[in-house]
Length: 331
Image (cartoon, rainbow, N blue to C red):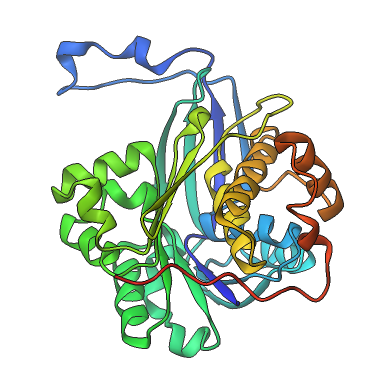
């Protein structure tokens, strides 16, 4: 199963606020907000949803492919990704633009306020699966230029290419009609708990309405774990224990990477979900979305320690890889 990852390529500017955001808000003045947060630190990191997901999938033994647009400052980043086993042949360089930029401020409760500058990402609509990824078996549509996200959805339906729909941070930006079009017929809808509630509010769809249109639902819920609902069967996935928590940016991307690698390996959904939970734990323990590292042997050992399961991930250590799990039935 060749998975092609679409989404942003960006540089992340990560800031830390030594307090709680909610202490700065006045309940009866939310319609007129004017706030500034004095931060303790600012660090520039490699980021973007597509490389974040691809990096963790590569650590887990895949050679993932990215289909995205990047700016004139991508050269060193491309070399770094390729050195870690990531296929960037479907990344289009936009010569007169810079890579997108993600500015995020995190408070002491790991709440985040972020802004995103599109940069080269605004040209993502120039890419098509037919030209740049004709051998894809599955794709994930993650936050990107809204026009591009919609065009990818429509092309996937035209080509019969299964896709995971993951609007995430763009849920607030895209229209309810675009969300409905993305949900309708997707093989998995991927979201965190807050974004799923926003999807429901914007579209007027209930959870059951959404489940009637998708093959499955993946919902992360922070410290409460995650839910997988596949073909009507629900699976609760606990969090993996962390040794410490540094910063949460990219944890959701790592979760999706672990889940999709489990799908490639033909593992049960309960195991694939736990792979996602453990991958997210590695990111939580590091500052930045691509500063974690593990070997497959280390990942398997920690999986056994975290979930008290001796044999579930033996497949991860085998070559060649087994037949992938069937995707959930399309609606």
